[in-house]
Length: 112
Image (cartoon, rainbow, N blue to C red; front, side):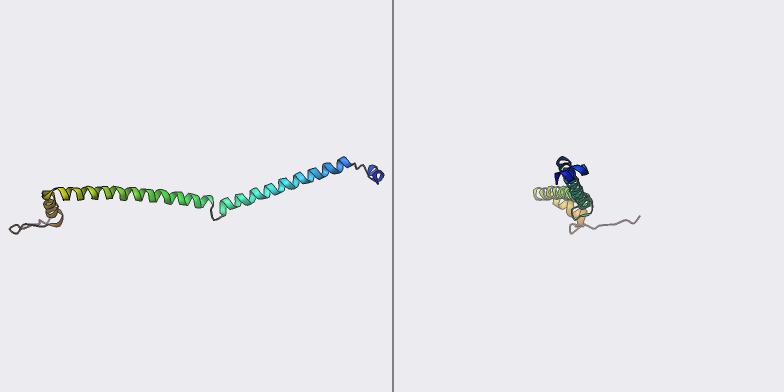
């Protein structure tokens, strides 16, 4: 049998080298396929790059909203503190904002 292979120019070394080349090619193809599937998942899957970018955009918007609400909360807390500490400030706010008058006062509005 060795003689038949030898006549055909096939040696044991050449057979094993072909198998190694075929095995390497198979591994490269499998890895390439895996990378392709991962790339497709990253671009189009449920947790894609585009979804991530959209979530980052929403996060920034929500952080701005939170910052605005915290600023408003601070202003309201300061206003409450002023109202609790000063009776004259309470009267000023009642007059300016709610048009509350003393019993002997009248409010006159002028049209432009």
